[in-house]
Image 1 (tube, one colour):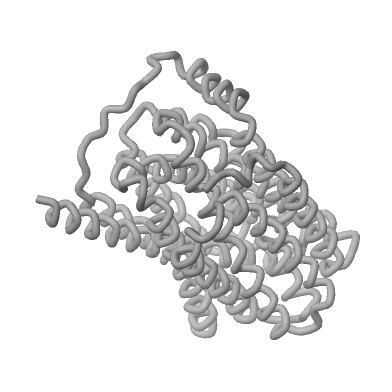
Image 2 (cartoon, rainbow, N blue to C red):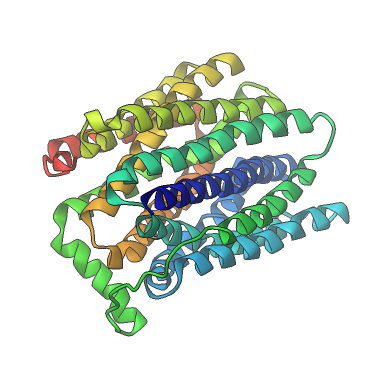
Length: 402
């Protein structure tokens, strides 16, 4: 019986990892195509920032509500709804481009709709994992699942860099739609028992409020969320729009150069995930979380001195190493030290902090890049990221999490 359970656990892990790898590959290609095509169509860093921001606004508008849904409904069904809906939405973009409908506003609206459905997925998946994975294996499995994204973001941009030599940027959106469908079918094949969760039986607004009450009474979890909000204001904008602006306008590179730099980011993230899988038990999760924030800011500040695509690729690899150190540590802290009946709401707040502040950060980078050189923007934002980590280190309560 035990062998059967272990076999089922391994099969489910493989399926979940494969589904995440496929959909994340599509996400990597989509993100590259969206930013580059808008930058190419308009030539404006500000407009590119606004359109890219539209893909993250739903996290602000609907993110916490998605967490309430994840705590009240079947989490697997929510993941499937998210994937199928995103596939349909993103498939419209290449159709518009095929008919020469090159209007950035409509592409921005579609990006907003896609992201709205996508906001269902992160809280549902992060809350679903503790239902099928023993607590003592959460750290390793979260690290393993993280490698799916890093592997995909290594494969996706590298593949896009090659394909861009033989096809248009618009054609890349087709893969994103297909990837969601393939991932959904894999998720449907995962076997799991129905979990009876303790529900508050409150109206949705009151249930949402109870999640904030939980944060109010748990100061260290609240502080992690606040640091996540501040850190992502400094980190995400440069990653999403700062890199393509630097490659195109400062380093005078091509779309392929941008794609391979993005692949370098993924290589660094994959390395960081493997480190977490192998060595994270030797360190406190809280310590790793704060060190990752410091590393993120430090490596961004180094872009101030970049003069070539090659040097940019080297630095971005080192920068990428710190990202899974942050995300895996934070996820495991929330999964292990908070009740499962709150996981949907808490992880939706994390998603709000990450994606919501990404929208703000993207807009800020787009605006600042119109006024000051992009390499100076990286220096300023990098220093801000380092300060966030130092503030966290000064508060000893986060360092207690094993």
